[in-house]
Figure (cartoon, one colour):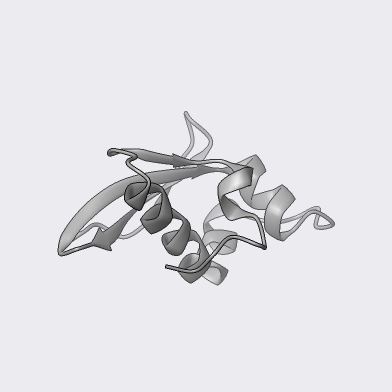
Length: 88
């Protein structure tokens, strides 16, 4: 079982866990990455709320990175969340 996602203030990231082939993999995504990818016109967005609204897409990005050989912890970048990324 994994922990619920949370915002880590010191690093400015949402930290979360994704199940990949029966194992939970730790991952993170930065506040700025979430803002520019999903809420670029917002002025009052909260990173954890944005993550929750787009968790499926973000979790899919972690699965893609793991499939490409990334190891834990997976740190997502804006490129990983591009709209044209294939779904696993």
